[in-house]
Image 1 (cartoon, rainbow, N blue to C red):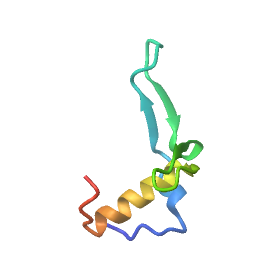
Image 2 (cartoon, rainbow, N blue to C red):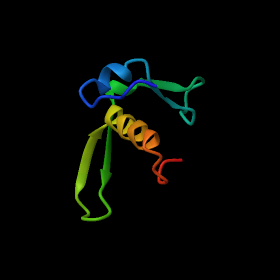
Image 3 (cartoon, rainbow, N blue to C red):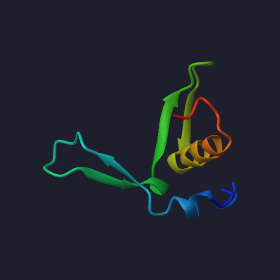
Image 4 (cartoon, rainbow, N blue to C red):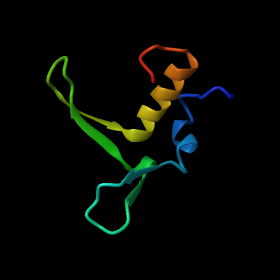
Length: 72
């Protein structure tokens, strides 16, 4: 597997999508990962945070390659 550079993470997620199978529509809603952000409250300091979803994929891939136990 090629090294997943932090400089090119958005080009590697260009074809990635988020699928909402719980939508009220007849078919699932699909969103482009590069157009999505995740909003959450950081449990360590209770601050509101926003992060690009594609960046989370980069972190997941990097952690998986480094065999971190936290990635399942």
